[in-house]
Length: 84
Image (cartoon, rainbow, N blue to C red):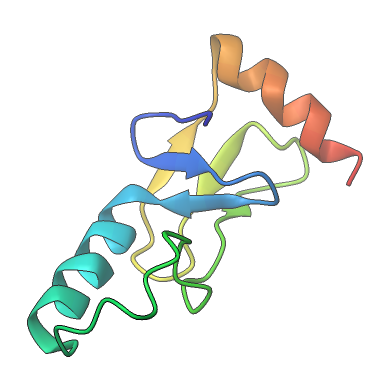
């Protein structure tokens, strides 16, 4: 899994680490203790991060507003996802 300081790539988009952790914590406290449906997948209800502008060098979380510039190795990854 590719990640930056504030986002991680789930193969088809980027999720905010902070919002994902918040949702996971909420699910632990409010979900029934059943293990019948634990497939380990990321909650699809989380909004994917979006590119901050057309240069695609910064991601922004649509939910909490955190933004991060992609540099180095992660910047090379963004070129791969630009074509999708």
